[in-house]
Image: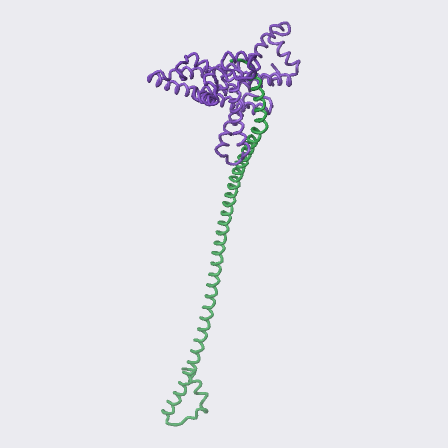
Length: 288
Length: 156
């Protein structure tokens, strides 16, 4: 827990504000010093913390896997290769199970989603205060007030990140729908079901909702789970520093929630991957 | 909790990562996995083939052993036959030799007997002449009475 003059709501607010880089009318290009400033920056701002962690973790994943792929052998695999093969086998199994068309992009896409989302979710298991505190102290060395330095380490608790991935998947769904079925086929799929051509408006509403719900549910499911998980960690962290009993109880709770959260982390990464595969499979189906 | 440029940045990062994974990570590992699968399949097939070959070899060895056994029995039978033949022949030869020796011995004995008899007869004749001389106290001309002596000797 931060300093004593901070209220619980300040503490939570601090934890839920991103390190935002953007333009303020009176200051130019700056990091936001408060949630209000971050909001005032509007659309043309960057969540530097989310992006750094997200890209860093994705880079870490690709670095590790690329290293294994460089030294890959068809003979007896080493420990790293064994591990990578285990994951790749798992992903490949899922792709083959759910994706019936032929597309060389789907399996690497699924692997990237699974490993990347898993790593981003995994950041949730790092004690909530550790990295923000260290970063605040570090920035303090340069004269910044730690209370106005924000750092969120779990990228998947940022809707920008989950929506970004879900939208990318959505665009791929649109691209392959049109590529496989043609514009007419795709429009027909949206308008001629389930009521036939006399119910086109109703069809369009129904199918349009089902189409738009894909990226929305994909991103909100991941975001919601991770955001809620992080929130509980933050609430548990509020128990520290008051007295002995509360601190010990908080420790026990945090341990219990972290262990349970391992399941959620893996499950959400897995669900994101499987749904992506399923959506892309639906985009490749020619008959409705 | 604002939607902003981060979203588009994440989309770009996502696209780049997927492209990289698709180009540099997935294919080499998948290729190695396929290669290993092929290798294992080949190994299994080779093992299967080896087992079959072993079975064939075993059959062949068994047959060869059977043939060898039959041949050995044949040779033993032949040897037995030859042995019997040789034995018979030897027996026959021995019998013939024995017969020949016996005949020769018989002939010799006969000859000897005859000679002894002749000698005995001559001696007897001489003895008889001597005895007669003594009895008659008178020399008898042996040559003059040869015919007589001979007839005497023959009666002996």
